[in-house]
Length: 163
Image (cartoon, rainbow, N blue to C red):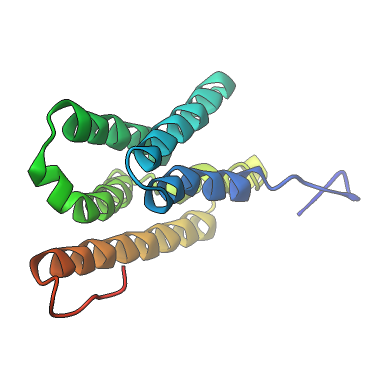
């Protein structure tokens, strides 16, 4: 998409969705407590930046809420239940976020896409429908991850489904 006929527009929306996954990548990549600390700090910084710009995103709010709850469950309550099911909960929370955004007719990907497209497109049926399908694809991927993690949690010796 070109701005003023010649200069490329910055891809803030695309960068925003990539950055939205950074706290999760930190969480999955580092051992406790560093993964949780990185996820919490990363999600807090992302959401604070968005709130400062007046454009908070659903995914980043849900991500921060998850890491706050995970910190309480892991280090405040020392919950063995959370420790066992955290892999399932990660994907279940993300799936619920995507599905709820569809249910309220505001696909979470639309919040990011709007940053890359002129306002004239925001209400166009094809633009909205495309984001509904993208959000649905994310929801299905997150549901698969939750199912695979649940299977692996319940059957650790049988098979390791990729999740």
